[in-house]
Structures are given as structure tokens and as C-alpha cells.
Image 1 (tube, helix red, strand yellow):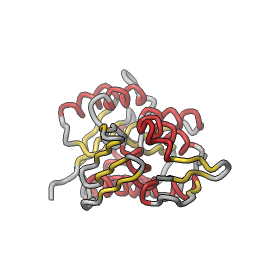
Image 2 (image 1 turned 90 degrees about the horizontal axis):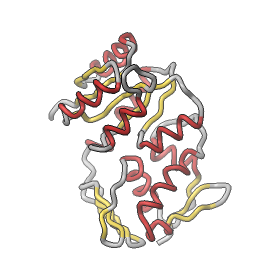
Image 3 (image 1 turned 60 degrees about the horizontal axis):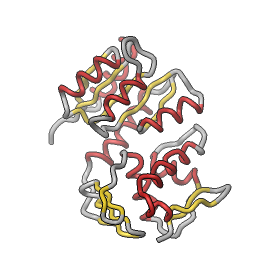
Length: 224
């Protein structure tokens, strides 16, 4: 099997090396960049990069701008590394299409575990399951979504969220349950960040998005 390449972006060389060393020990190939501008250039040059670990505060081009640039071309999973821990910053990251948000200081072992969880879902064998309800058709193997016959362009997290909803049709799902299954790790932030993803998912699904019902004070339920 081909080796998986991960791009680590941070203006602190010590931090880059720390993360890279743990990833290399796990068998990944690692590329490094010291700012957002270099990261975008490397990604466009090496389109086989499977995941990006990206710092926020960097010279030349910060992490937010780099995400915007990369999202014009790809839905490659992105993990943001940042010293900022405020909810506003976290929501901004999710709005831009960030898949994970890790606040410094962090455990390199936990970071690697999150990397592996994402890669299992993006590069692993997904089978040929097809989900069909409320005018929505999801091909888990091809990673495609159609709503009322029209293709829908979803981010990685939005896709995972939709699959989880459809696989639990008619079941009341708390925000904590959704985070534990879709994000696949113990989440210590505000569970309301899930609302941001649901809002964007509904908008992208159009009329079919009405199948995602809000259960006030608890979470959501998918009703065909």
C-alpha cells in the first residue's frame, strides 16, 4: 500500500519537528512548511497530500487564509493547531471547513490518534453502502451526495455528519452523541459547535435539509 503523506505547517521549527517525529514513527511521510504561503504552494505542487496539520498565527500568510486558499481546490482534511482557545476562533475554523481544532499545548500522541481516526475514514475501505432517504442519496464508497437528483458538494465533516444522521434515521441524537461518533474523540469544547455544521449541511441540501429536525435542548433527529 502507498505511504500516506501529511503536511505539517508551523512557523516554529521545534513544533514542526515534534509533530513530524511522532508521525514518522507511525509510518507516515511528512512534508513541512514554515508559513501559510509555503503550505499552499507545497499542497498545489504535491496533490497526493492526504492531510494537513496547520498552525494559525504565522508570517506571510496565516492559517485562516491558507485554509481559504486550499479549500478553493480541495477538501483535504485539515487539523488546525493554535494557541487560541476561544469559541469564536473555533467556530471560525469550522466555518472555513476545518475538520479538527487542537489547542496548544497538546499531547502529540493524542494528535496522532486524531490523525489516524480521520485517515481511517478518508482512505480506508468504506464498502459500497448506499443510503437513500428524504430525496438524498449517499454513496459511502464513492463519497458522493445527491439531493433531489442534484450533486451536493460537502466537506469531509459535513459528509460524515450526514451519514451518521441517515444511518440513525428516526433516532433522537444528542449533540454529545454526534460529536463522539462523528468527531471520534473526547471533545472538550462547546458542543454547540455542532450547530454550525448542521446549519451549513441543511443549506447545502436545500429542500431535503428539512429532514434534519432540531430537538430543542438536546440535539437532532433525521426524519425521512
